[in-house]
Length: 189
Image 1 (cartoon, rainbow, N blue to C red):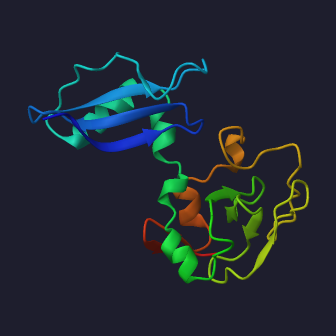
Image 2 (spheres, rainbow, N blue to C red; image 1 turned 30 degrees about the horizontal axis):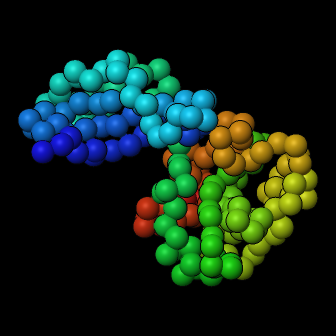
């Protein structure tokens, strides 16, 4: 029986990840992998630094990985695209043309969180009323809370986005109501 991946944590660049595993022998551990810059390298490449980590539980394996992998602590707090509950977004009226690709970003000035459908360049302004939208064309958007103008030459999502635009779970806890992993987080606006 092969190892079972219990959890995958990817860094903000999308080029490094940690796998929390349950091994075939019943023990737990973690592996660190990266994507190479060489276009001939496909898939994930195991770093090989921690293949012998043996832990009694997945929680211990995660704690050990956090202590040994420099970037991991910061990545644990990021809200990734995979956390967005598309069904809930659609239920609230967020459907566009049928090929939606959602991500979250925040205003670096006031930390207001926004949902974007980057497939059709649409920014949702209100988590409770997804009919409130605006065009996300570069340089055309200003934060509705503080007026911060997002510059056209500054990516707000994806691996090239500055960390000041990335959304953490703590940011969600301080801002508006968004649907993440099927849970509606209701927090003061």
